[in-house]
Amino acid sequence: MPALSFLKSTLVDPQSPACLWRHPVQAARVVAAAAGNVYLPALEMLTGIARRECSVCGWRGYRFRTFLSADEVIRDCICPVCGSFDRHRLLVLGLRGELAVLKGAVPQVLVGFSLSGAMRFLLEHEGLARCFRSDVELNDRRFAPDFLTDLRRAALRDKSVDWIFCSHVLEHVPELEPCVDELERVLKPGGVAWIQVPLEPQLACSRSIPVDQHRAHAHAWQFGPDFGELLGRSGWRVTEVCACDQIDAAHRRSFGIAAEERYWLCRKRG
Image: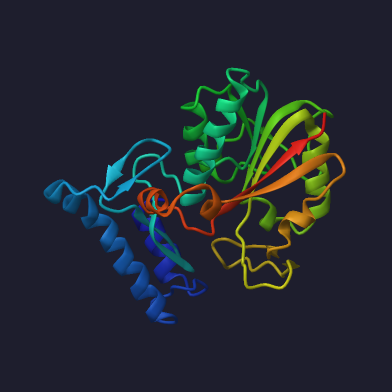
């Protein structure tokens, strides 16, 4: 988003959680973080210190950039070259591990739901077949969909897709069950769905919530540790992959991956 548009929608909009006169503390946090993103490249050029490395594109620098929105400020988060978050940097390590096991048997039909620019970069640089991008609308140019479809009724044939990427999508859809059923339906036997959602470990169980249209990232769900159970289907096997179990602390620090970051691997039975 251009700086002027971001400023207007974040600091000037009275409905924004970072409105200057209604929420000055959050507004100050956003402004300070934005300033930090501006001076970091100069700091890296002057010092040459590289404490972070992107597992997606190979960028090295002092610190990842801060993610900014009206209601969220996340430090040391985004790669300045490929735009990956820590969830993407974790996923690429899993993808490379899966490809190593396949030993050249690369999946041919890939579909990504609301696929981000970072995920697109990731897939295109891993030697995979083209990933067809889908979204429910054309409003957000970041996702540049190849076709439009509603995940609750996916316009894809049964058993037609080798790999599915569904990263930070399901938390936005109130009708979770039909979406999971559709993901399982369109996968080929032996196919894999890579699923990521934001997790709130302190919750006793996942719960649906009212969608707040004024928030930058309006969610319809808060997912707890039972999320893997919500994915359970007789047609596939679900494996939860957590960063703290897969990557040592030194590499997590270098790649900027939070210990609690994770994804779910849903492998369809043959």
